[in-house]
Length: 167
Image 1 (tube, rainbow, N blue to C red):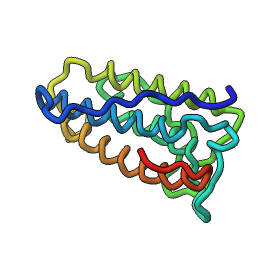
Image 2: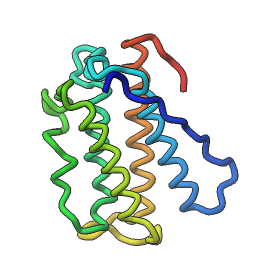
Image 3: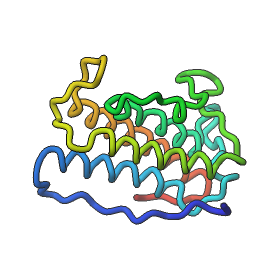
Image 4: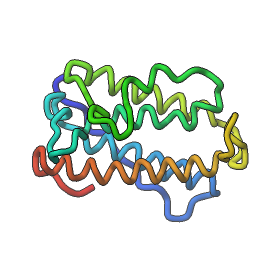
């Protein structure tokens, strides 16, 4: 893989059909924004830690968000060992990445998102996460916040890498 592809991002409708559709549309917009920030970059660029002293990189964000998708995975009852790798929040190596794994990390992210969609398909927003006190509604809202925060980081990282700004 020489460069990551640039996805097409669809703006969510201003007047959604219902609450669930609005949450799904906004989350999909945020997921695509992350990949848009990585699009057109080489694996070597994706691993750049361009805002010292942070160890954060675009590829690190992709890996982190693969693991964060586990909020949805809880609904399917399957183990999550494939998506958490070695991410440790707050650790000095929390965003350690390997340029040789960039394609695998993208594939894992895409698989994690697909699993998330499947795990909650057809569930009501008031459905409580197994073993937790969180409803599916809360998880959607949390995930939109999580992606939005990290997409802000991605904006800064991308601008530092090649000057690209904007949506």
